Length: 249
Image (cartoon, rainbow, N blue to C red; front, top):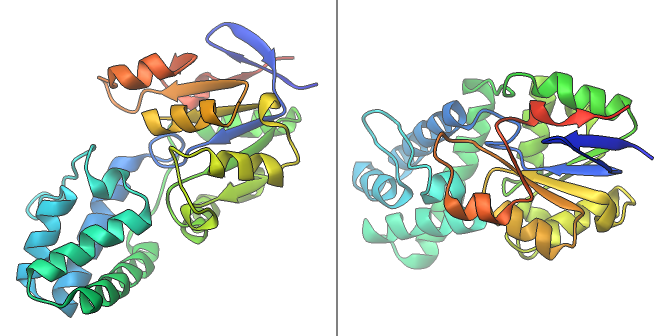
């Protein structure tokens, strides 16, 4: 059976389910690019007033494109993020049903343009680590609050999609993280019992989902210099980078 080492502890592990943004993929550049593309799409469809409301509600600076790490754009699943967009359009004077339709159109336009305007990248050492784990017989999966097609496009553009046995997006389940549904589906698609799998993420919601799914261990990646106490308390292990997960011979 494959074995991995995390923070000096060695244990058997058939599957590792990773969060994507902030865990595998450097999130800051992606968030800025996504913020800019959505702002431009909303402005083009509705106007600057709606964009101003959207930026305030989403935690986005329209001057620097900085994104609040705890805000909706950075943390909300797409279906919740769409509600934020629709609310911004409603505040700008649109009827609610129309606001929902135009918000969905703006987000789709923005996501399509993002493919050409943003080049995603993995954190240092991640590609080498997941390649070693895969070569050692550990199955790998992604469970992300992004749409599955977007996650697959991101991994494909980096050149590592073929390393993953399954990709689960928020659109694949009724309840995204912190519900365990995404992790359970990843285990099902990889034909692996949750008790033989490990969850790795950078948010408390990842840890809660992993525990609720009955996974063997939940591992927190410090995506900031000052991770929340909730993240640290919920995790079995806290590491600086996915590159610190080792395949144990």
